[in-house]
Each structure stands twice: as C-alpha cells, then as structure tokens.
Length: 194
Image (cartoon, rainbow, N blue to C red; front, side):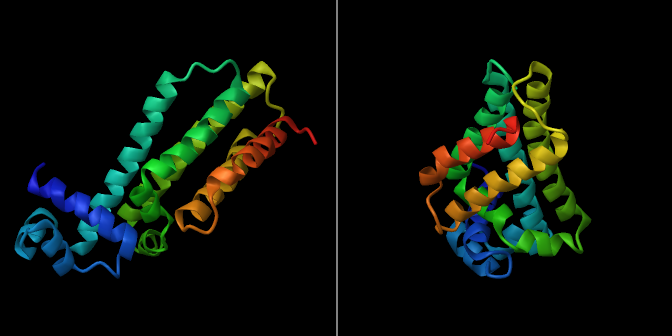
C-alpha cells in the first residue's frame, strides 16, 4: 500500500471515530508513521484530506452498489427494491467507517461552505435514490409496485432504511432485529396494502 493510501485509510478511521474537528494531524502522523510534512505533501490541508476521504467513501459505496446491481436477477420490481434495501443494510455493516463518516454532522456542516463537499454528498444520495427509484419504476411497469410518485416514494423509503442504519451505526438499536418489520413496511409502502 502506498504511503498516500495508508494515510487515507488511517484518516478514514480517525474521521469516522473522532469527526473532522476531533481528528488531529499529529495523531494521524503517529498512526501512519508519516511525518506531518509528508501528509501535507499529499494533501494541501486537513480539509483537502477530509474531502479526499469523502470522495473515496462515495466511490466505494457506489462501486459496491454497482457490483450488486449487476449481479441481481430479480423477478420483478418489488424484489429489486427489497434486494436494494437488504444490500444497503448489509453494506452499512461491512463499511462501518464509511457510513460513520456520512452520518456525522461534520460533512453537512462543511457542505455549507464547500461546494466540493456538497457535491460529494449530493452525488452519494442522488445515486442511492436513483437505485431505489429504478426498482420502483420497474415495479410500476410490471405491476408489482403501486405508487403515485416513484421519486418521492424512493425518498421516503430511503429515509426509513437510512434511519435504521443510523440507529445501528450509533449503536442505539440493532438493525437486524428490525429487518423483518422493515421489509413488511417497505412492501406496504410499495404496494399500498394495509
């Protein structure tokens, strides 16, 4: 692993655990064995490093979803959406540091003044919403989903699923215990059944 990649990997862990403000470059230097000057050789400043970490988080999450979507052979749209929900929960468990970063307040606070940060966050959520919406639209075409607005339904569904992921990420509640209830609620939302 290159020094730059080692710095990024350690920075990801530190930013996820301590947040942007709570991460000290001296601590990153100690963990990686890279002098502070070496860190700043690769990254202009702490914000530049954080933005690169956020970009890597975005690329990793979207790459995993792309791979998942390519391997799926769903029968209908509702099965596709249910597969996306299940995969999102699984991914959040396997990419804990990355999800901690996007669930912290820091990136959203930084996005208020940093167009680059805002762009990274928007592209993460836009792509995820597109994936949810694609399944919903497929379901509307094949009759397995009955909703009025695929985009709004995707937003509500994503907010529900991501909310459960956040509860799990911050150890408030175990997402696994809510899985069956979540899938029932998703199916009801998508089919309009009571």
